[in-house]
Every structure is written in C-alpha cells, then in structure tokens.
Length: 155
Image 1 (cartoon, helix red, strand yellow):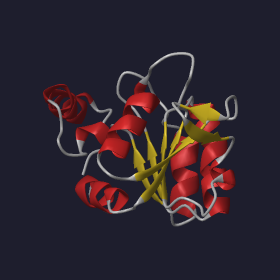
Image 2 (cartoon, rainbow, N blue to C red; image 1 turned 120 degrees about the vertical axis):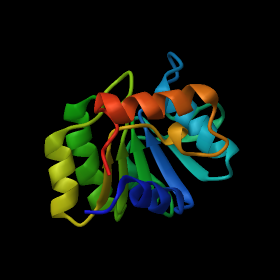
Image 3 (cartoon, rainbow, N blue to C red; image 1 turned 90 degrees about the horizontal axis):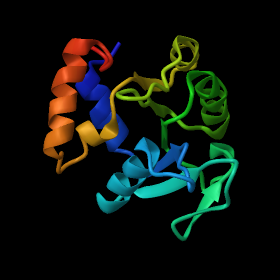
C-alpha cells in the first residue's frame, strides 16, 4: 500500500477531477473543494444527480456522464452513497478516488475495499484542501489534528 503523501501526490497529478456531492441549496465541503481545485487550475466537474448546473458550470448526474471522462474523483457524500459512486468511478475508468472526511464523513470501508480490489488508488479520509497549495491556515491545522485524531489516513 502506498503512503498517504504518495496517494495525494498521484491524485493531485491528475488534471480532470470530478467533485461528487456539490450542492446548490447550501455551501458545504464539496462546494469549497470544487472552488479550490478550479482556482488551482484543475479541470473540475461538478456531480450531483439533483441539479444540472452549479455556479454556471454544467453539473452531471454521475461520473459516468462527464464528457471525455475524469481521471480522479473526490466524494463528499454519505458513506452508503460512496459505495455506489466508487462502482460508477470504476465503470468510468477513474483510477484515483478520495473519500472526504473531516467534519463530515464520506468514508465507507466497503467502498475502500472495493477500490483496492479493483486496483484503484483510494484515499479514505481527509480533505484535498489540506494539500492543494496554497493551503490555508485552517486546513493546515485540520491536517495536523486529523492525523492524530484518526480521520486522516495514516502513512
């Protein structure tokens, strides 16, 4: 199994990243991650089956519907939803998956196991905003706390 830093570096080396769970009804972690990745120059795709647009960008019902596909996906969904999303990612050819966990939790051990069984690189916890530069002070602190609180995957 790869170290957390290797998994993060490989995930962030991808150019086309889906963010599953963006919401138009309220701002949450998925929305913040979407903005951070977009501002950092990634080609980002919003995914939520309940809406067709997010802040002027198209929003897709599934990672399988993204034109040209995505290389990686961040999930900010309930753990039981993550279990279906990883199957969709596998079917769409996405090899890098990040299940968000900090204040909320998208991590499903069943989904993590599915990724590993299907040779998909998986990060089961933490937040991309703890690693995408520039990292704000709040996420630096969350990274430190998450490592010791156990919701950031250990190396």
